[in-house]
Length: 168
Image (spheres, rainbow, N blue to C red):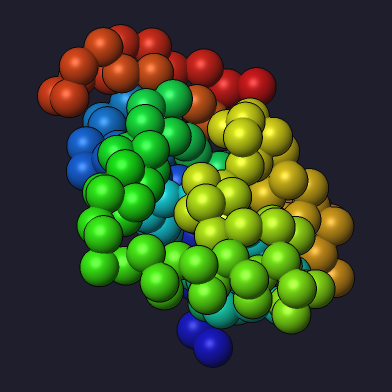
């Protein structure tokens, strides 16, 4: 794998905010060449050895990442609620939803959710979801202990502009 000499920051964006990438590049004091953005739509359950974690780990070593920032918009949970309403509004999917509910409830113990709706909704609390992702990244055996992992929450006043940015 190619190791760049310059240290970079990986921004792991949760949600479907199309403006997040541009906002991050405009608002950080980091050179644009030192930023890697990995975006994932909707709620995320970061499995320690899943595909998404593999992508993060590969990026860490390929691009000489020194910090991972988990970014979430306070509006991203609203987006998943809209999609859930559309899925449950389709009557032709009723039989499939019932079957999937049964499978999730009785046959798939590796899934922490008990129903299709819980799985589609993701975590009830956006903060809890981000904290779980940060904890998983910090304690992963293939992520070096010296790589800083932090959280960044974007609060948007409207679809085009970010009003406030807070790092916890």
